[in-house]
Figure 1 (cartoon, chains in turn purple, yellow):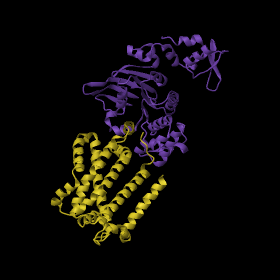
Figure 2 (figure 1 turned 135 degrees about the vertical axis):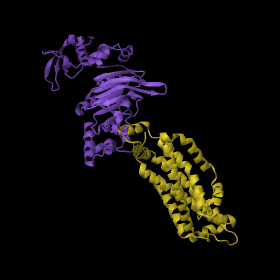
Figure 3 (figure 1 turned 60 degrees about the vertical axis):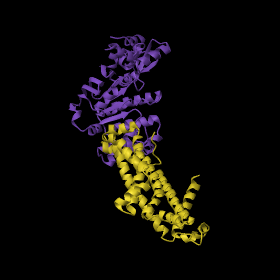
Figure 4 (figure 1 turned 45 degrees about the horizontal axis):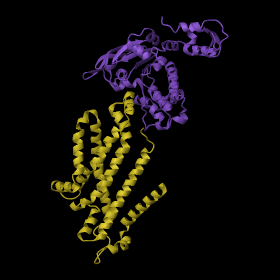
Length: 311
Length: 246
């Protein structure tokens, strides 16, 4: 658990982050979203002290992060950034091994971990371990950047616009991968983005920042149904808020026992996608199937629509 | 074509070695440049010894320049040393703009004749290219790479040694190479204050109005400069051929 307690950063008379407080749950993805200049990156960088706070505290599992040397703190916290920041003179394997080497792991353990991570990120160790960053595609570079951040099994991973430089298709894949990785390693992830769709897709909680202040820190659905500030409504966008709300719930959560002659919908699909399918097929209900293709309930248009309304 | 370049380099090396080991076999080529039966090949000293002395002087001076210029370049690119950048730059620039001959004139009364004033002059003259390239190389490190290094938990020293210097190294080596080549030529003037070197041959030629001496002194110095340059380029390619900084 990370506790951000009245954290502020001032440069001269300019306040970049103003009394930000939030409690970040363990084993979850928390997204900080805001326009450029909102202070979201500065807030993130105060967690690993790349930026020293002017006032306030950060506690990780109850321990004040200001108590140990900053570079030692950072070895325990994964950090991935936009444009990956891979070391151009080091191979993929050496890049990933950075923090384990700093921590003094022995050779065999480092190599085993590097191979494991390359496997997790669908990069064949035999092919990729010896390559240099400039020999990789943008998506591969980004994956190596995240693999490097996770190398020393950090409990916390900070990500600053990690997918900002990717094209939409690779970006969607990278987001899915991140959700998988979060579940696999049970990492506490704090991610900064300016993209509200990305925030909704990844975050179990979302903090909306503007002008250095956290305007609302809540579950994504609550940002839509109970915005605390007009700026939050503007960020989430009101034209398609019902659809956004539907995208936050899966078909499996809403399915009721029963059968349907309509099209099949995966339990993991969002209500938004399920509704789209029903509209497309002109059907009133769909059969929900689990990951193995076994029917596990049915879903009606009316049930879907009921979830697109606040309250 | 790389093949022909390598061949040319090999030919230059062969020519240099042959001239230094058996200078008299080249006498017929230089005879037409002499008058009144003057010697065609420098005969007041061994050309090989003079060439080695000159190379040694240059290497010593450039090594010292490298140590000081790289150290200074690192210091002024740290946050704590940034305020000394203008001062350091001025000092190093003076070293470059102040003519080496003038440095010799000042140094001789202080340290006497011979090798010492020459080393001082070459040291001052060689600082600028290395200093500027060190700063340029360190500043060219991509900000995302530096941020990642700090974010991974490298201390400032670890970041400098394992990320910044290796990335700046191609430019730093280029600076050393420029310094080295400039100094091979400049070292010849050291002979005016009694330092051993091929300048001696050129000066003897000027004093006795012997064009053959002047030409062979100049030719040998030029060959050494070209070969040193090529060697450095080859070393740089070998070490950093696969590094690309986007």
